[in-house]
Amino acid sequence: MTTIDRYIVRAVLAMSGLVMAVLLVIAVLFTFIGEQADIGQGRYTALGAFSFSLLNLPQEAWDLMPIGALIGSLLGLGQLARGSELIVLRASGVSVARIAGSVLIAGVVLLAVQGLLGELLASPLQQAARQEKALARFANASISGGSAWVRDGDLILNVQGLAPQGRSGGMLVFRLSPDHHLIAVGRAARARAGTDGLWQLSGYRESGFTQDGVSTTPAGDRTLPSHVTAEFLGLAAAQPADLDARALWTVIQYDRANALDSTAYVFAFWSRIARTLAIVFAVLLAIPFVLGALRTAAAGSRMLVGLLIGVALFLLQRLIETGTVVFDLNRIVLAWLPTLLLAAVTLVLLARAR
Image 1 (cartoon, helix red, strand yellow):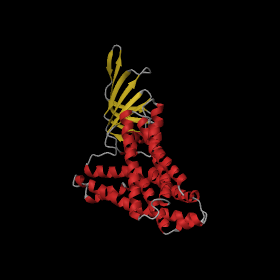
Image 2 (cartoon, helix red, strand yellow):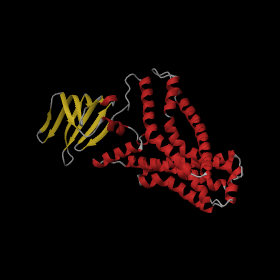
Image 3 (cartoon, one colour):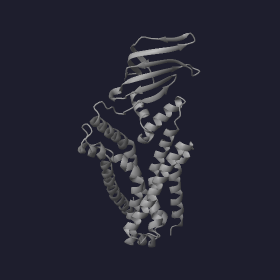
Image 4 (tube, one colour):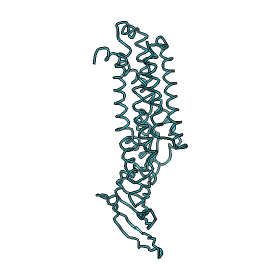
């Protein structure tokens, strides 16, 4: 890395860090305000609401990073432009492509931070925040607060009241024939995930359907072999947008192996990757602005431009997410659409930059 690279990268990263700090303070404030209605329920206090807000910080940072990177790049490069540093570089024969290469290094650093937040911190800390809140508000709360439907070969399982250590409130088991006819329905009062893919069912009673009628078995304990693990059930019960890329890929592979519809998870998976890569184009987009119309503009003007572009991308992403559900459109194409539009605009403006 040359002196020019270090100079530009330092300016972009410093301003991006400052912008992200401001945005995250605002995000924590709004999250804390949104929790006021729940304070006082059970053992949920103001301190618990503040802890909930802080644990959601990595997820908020992941959501806001593209906007923060764009505004930070605009402000960082804008400072260099107003101080004539960029003019000196251009007069010294440094091309726009060379400056873009230096900015790209800063974008890659921010991309790495985004990956760290999204894949290692955001999902587990957000889940921990929801668990703490649920345990504080309700004495009988569980991690997922619901049930999960999954298919495992010729079995369809409905695991109810998911809880820690692989326990659940109960399990419904639907057995299918090879030609997909229902041949038995069973229910367990309690279910626990054991080792080697075995579920320990307590109070299990099953009704089998034959041509001669319905046969029932008395309630008792039973071992159910299954490829479904307690960890996977936690993924199946979560919303696709709350899962990291690895978890989404696990669910997609499982759904495909069992001929299930995985379109919502496919969209969330590719959308997550596309939104992460958008950071690179967001920082590059600042270059044609600071070399052109915003070269002598005030910091407030550059921040306003960054906010407008970032909000437009955010709204487009939300509109696309809604459209894919309502109109059943191509998930992969639409997941990449906002990032592709941003990339196209960035490359066109860079090509025209002087």
